[in-house]
Length: 220
Image (cartoon, rainbow, N blue to C red):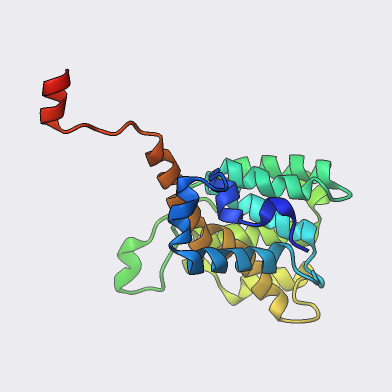
């Protein structure tokens, strides 16, 4: 069941007040707003979480948002994570891992060829050994895979999927990985861009209107 606070996830995270002029502007793109909302509900408020539980979904989303430099979004998902049984310990571990995983990309190596000139070295993220016990093997593997997908997708190989298998992912149904990937793309992909645009609108509304040069001259 959809909670009251998430009836409009983009508006909530962008700080757009219901009934405001900014909300009216967004209503002109109601289909995009509806699609973003449906995506959020399918991932984080489904009727059946199956074997990819709410804790893991919120943790993955918080991590991706955090390493992208979106603290408000990360905190939103961390708040959801904090409601779980082991929430407080997981939240603290994730905050530390977010700091360790922050970087900029994309980077990595293309297959040998013309694009090799664009190869770029960057952080190869691994969860700290000291926090693996708190996060668990499944979640630790998911965070490392999420970082791979976000920052160095050109390096991804079948071996990386095997790491997920070995950690307990995909053990029963192959589409579990697809849901995990959607959590990553849902935060860093189109919905993330819509959130950025909404924030730009909100900021723009707070900037005093610039007067034409003649008007400034006439009125000082």
